[in-house]
Amino acid sequence: GIQVEQSPPDLILQEGANSTLRCNFSDSVNNLQWFHQNPWGQLINLFYIPSGTKQNGRLSATTVATERYSLLYISSSQTTDSGVYFCAVRVTGGGNKLTFGTGTQLKVEL
Amino acid sequence: DVKVTQSSRYLVKRTGEKVFLECVQDMDHENMFWYRQDPGLGLRLIYFSYDVKMKEKGDIPEGYSVSREKKERFSLILESASTNQTSMYLCASREVGPNTEAFFGQGTRLTVV
Image (cartoon, rainbow over all chains, first blue to last red; front, side, top):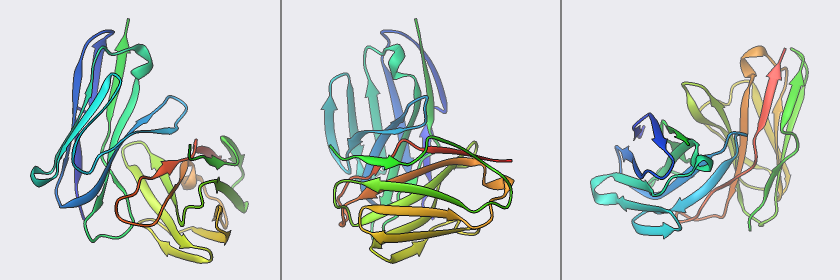
């Protein structure tokens, strides 16, 4: 099956710093989402981004499907950005399943 | 906004009990999913439903069953709960089609003692 690897696995930032999270996948996908899992466990939708670039406030994402990776940029980080960030993909022709990456645990400190 | 609601945030059950986890979505989505999340293992698909009364096994269906009698509601059933089913359970829904976005509920943290 498809492998979805995220890096780095853990990240500690000072408030105000910028960061880039990466998601690599091993097969062709037609669907990619980024989620933030808050401390209570809920998965919050950040981006639906099978290709191209999107921005939402301090967050932006880029997916280069032909090279099988996606990037999530966090600028001017805040303590409320802490949590786990997941990318999830659907394999082209692979049915309905979303396969999740390994996650990046982010901690933003004052 | 899409809303996916799981009936409980925290649940404690005894070994051998029959357990029902309920999920309701308000966007008329055809597809609904149940995942479990465990440290070191990530999120894994248990079952998926693509229509009322229709279901497909995911990666780890053993020990679970599901019910979808109405489009908006998808139930996960633990026939006889065991301690290795202690986990975080997450429900999701999505419109039909390849280019559609999945939305998740708030999660149910189940402990089986």
